[in-house]
Length: 381
Ligand code: FES
Image (cartoon, rainbow, N blue to C red; front, side, top):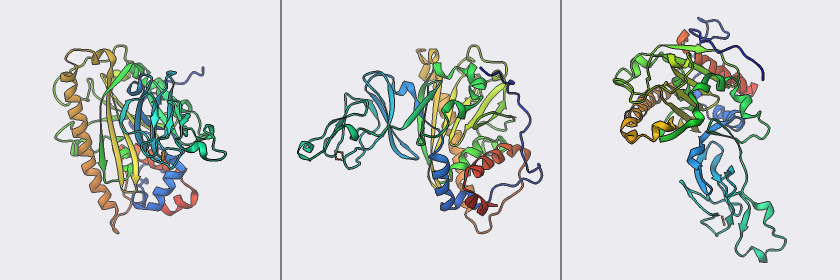
């Protein structure tokens, strides 16, 4: 295995143009439906995105239906114990098959009753015996590429994309001591927002706004930035104890065996293009964004704790302040971002100078711009 330098933080990481000359992106980056269309085709349908945790579909027959940027999908654990991802679409005339979460012996279409095994094979197609040359095997559920890292499930609509491990680069090295694989998801919500997907993620990767937007909750924060290898970015908000709760001592102790760097604060990561894991000393929570339209996105927030914590008799009572904090802070962010989206639509909106504390905003802008076709990127400069 290749040895790499340990990730060390810096006040900010920056690439050209020099600090002092960098500006925020063109307002149309966030408002132009043509840019959004290009982002869907060239970014979202070509990169890994977060779809949930393996413990949500732990047992044979367990399923979870979810909306994705590529349409309805389903995670299904087969009778053979193998977890698979499918397009959640019937092969007859494209009805949705599964809704929500549950456990099933087979998948039956609610429209005309075609049925599928949990491995996606078409099992029954009423009335189709009379159809000349109809055969079941070519009409199984369509698989979606899936990989997992430490219990986190990622999907990718591009079969030619590099493997998840390559995408994650050195992220597992930095987050390894949190042992995400030994955690359990215990809470999740979805928030519908009226803003562009990039605004949610840019905001989640800078601490510049925290003293203003979150004055009533988490307050002003200081962060350090990490140069990374792979398709991800990282900052760490410096704080000696968990910032995943608002007041007093955190209800849970620090995770056993955390690295020295991990004990210094909370990592906020962005796995491009839409997945954030926030890793405090006692918990990991995610922010995952699903782009819906150029000015609409769905923000999913979920919280995970080490499994032994979740088995404590007073776990729910202890975990409640974390859930309250995550939801309150997310709603504060959504509030300011919807204001930003409204203003970006003005004919008077224009790029403004960036602060050194906007280093990750610039990094995210550059990552997206570099993946758009040249003719689209050229309209944004
Ligand atoms: Fe599913 Fe007809 S659409 S059986």
